[in-house]
Each structure stands twice: as C-alpha cells, then as structure tokens.
Image 1: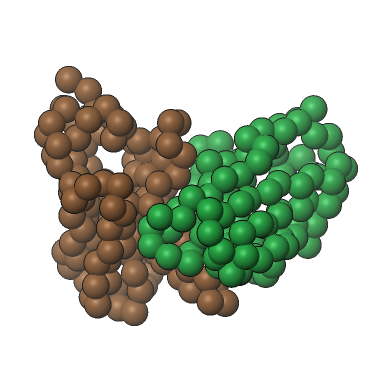
Image 2: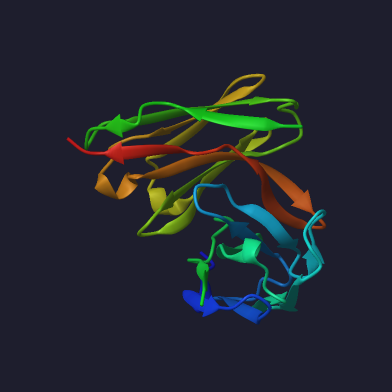
Length: 107
Length: 118
C-alpha cells in the first residue's frame, strides 16, 4: 500500500494569511494526487486533481504543486470560508489512500 | 446531477454483519466505479472498495470481510462481516470519476453513522 502523510495535522492562521499544507507519499505516485476540503458535517469536495489542476468552481487562491512523492496545497489569502480540514488522496494504486488530514483553524 | 444516499442500520452488535445500501439518482450505473469510503476519528478517511459492471476491488486492510454488490440499475451495497468497535465510522458512498488522469470521488452521499456496540 502507498501511505500518505500530511503535515501539519493542524494549524492556526488568520484571514489573509498564506497557508501551506504538505503531503508525502511513501513511494512515487507521479502526479496522481488530489486535494479535498471538508467542512464540519459536510462531505469532502475536490479542490485540486492531478496535483496541480484546479477543479471547476474552486477559487484561484487554491493551488497545488509537486510530483513524485512530495506535494503542497497552498491557500493564498485565507478567507473565512476556508477554515476546514484538508485531505490529500493518491490515485496511483489501489487502495486509494488518503492522508490523515490537516485542520485549518482560526487564530 | 447525480445524487447518492446511504441507508442502513445505525447500530450493529460486535461480531455481526454491517449492511449498507447506496441509492443514486440522476445518472447511470454504467461506465463508472461506485465506491465506499468510511471516516472515523481514529483512522481518518479509509477507502473500502469499488465496484463496476467490469470488476470489484477491495482494500486489503479489511482482510476479506467486505463484500460489494450492484443490486439494481441505481443501487449498490456494502456488507462488512465480523464487525468490531474499530468499524464504527461514518460510511460514505461515492462515484469514482477520472479528472485529467487522476481518480477522484465526486459526488458523495451525505454519509451514515454506523456504531458497533452491544
């Protein structure tokens, strides 16, 4: 199995901050990496697919980078509606494992 | 647009069998994989498995306890036997989609909480 490790597990930030979340795969997954946002009581929604591609309807302040084993989700100018938990997910091989999540909280 | 809804008992006794159904509307069962994912406080999001008319794949971590089936043209099911407290989670069904060349999950059902307890 490919293990996905996110860091940090949580962070506190202010509106307007630039936030960076990292995800590391236990082996190379090329660019088969997706990012999701999940708000309390809601389902995860795709933000970024293929490591760098913005899903339709997602604000451009979200961006993804990386390939191989190391990936980054960046939020440039945190907005109040961005306080949520973020997950990475690999689709290189079955099982399609997720990272453990990063909770972004208000400072 | 496709909408999915999970249904099934919210409480299952240890060692018994968990059975959930996902009913979807607004789309066809053809040409997609249909997926079960669970979320617990201890293990985060865990991919359980996927099913299509062309095949079935399971997460090996479930040690063959899981069974997926396509029941009708708009319903599929999950059975998990010999449950323990570790199987307590919110269970989601979702459609698998290919975005670019990456497999993702969209949309999701709202999720159903299953508690394993005597």
